[in-house]
Amino acid sequence: VLAKAYDWRFAATAVVTVVIYGAITFAISDWRIAHRRALNDADAEAAGRAVDALRVADYQEGAKWALQALERDEMSGFGWYLLAIARERAGAFASSIQCYEKALALIPEHAEVANDLGRLAFRLNMKPQAEKLFRHFLARYPGNPDAVNNLVSAIRDQGRYEEATEILGEAILKAQDNATLWNAMGAIVADQG
Image (tube, rainbow, N blue to C red; front, side, top):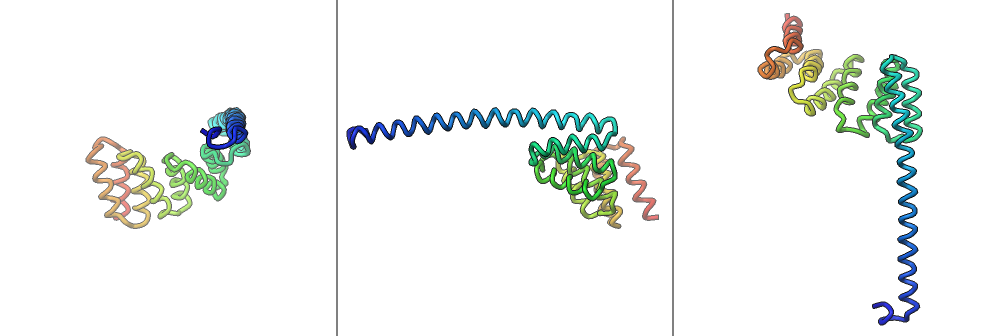
């Protein structure tokens, strides 16, 4: 079409340009995919070593490997999560909170991050923040007794006994033989006197 409408040289230039563009695009894509695979493999190895170190309670080594994974990919939510766990277990709570927040921002669908951050917030007497995080976890895992227990503990510690009792009552009706839920109810009754 171009050769008929314009000079044949214009059509040849257009075809050569498209061919060169396609070749360059494919070459760059192949390079990028190979590079990304290498990064993913290295990240997975570092993350695996971090998990292994955390399993044997070597929190410094776990943090070292998590940091190596993050050096390769600072947008690795799992890397931030591992670093948060290592720092929390080592007692570096302020740093751990920052790492949990970064992990949660990168992988919001991973509700376990919210639960762990909620536990730490609860431990540091940040009850409203803990409540919000526990609600996130409970929304992902409705009826989970540990999630219900964590949430009602945060609500109870804010003096909202009636709300905590209501949430627990609904959960107990669904899981009447769950000791964790009954213990939480007992704690609320004991707190009220």
